[in-house]
Image (cartoon, rainbow, N blue to C red; front, side, top):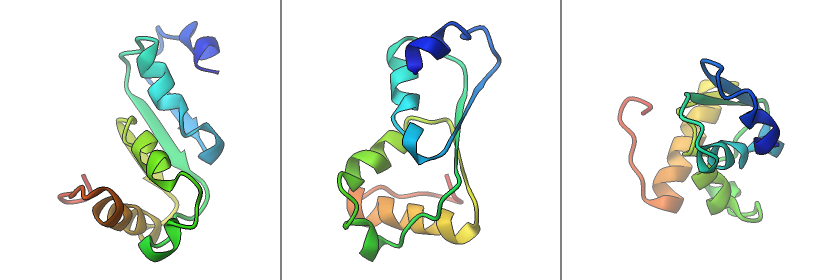
Length: 97
């Protein structure tokens, strides 16, 4: 998928949608894409006490950090993600950043 998108590298930005494409941001960076890359998650993000049940949850959270902008359906989903970053990866956010 990243190699196919690489042919569109002259675009102003890339916008990726949904969980099955989470690794795409990192893959685009590896190919040298230097444009902003955004990601929107159309499914709810689980609370920290539930996310550990997802296989490879730490890798999924790390792959989301490859994006320049993350969008979530609700503030609850965003807050769950930020809480997961803190509890599972020991990363802090400030004002949602």
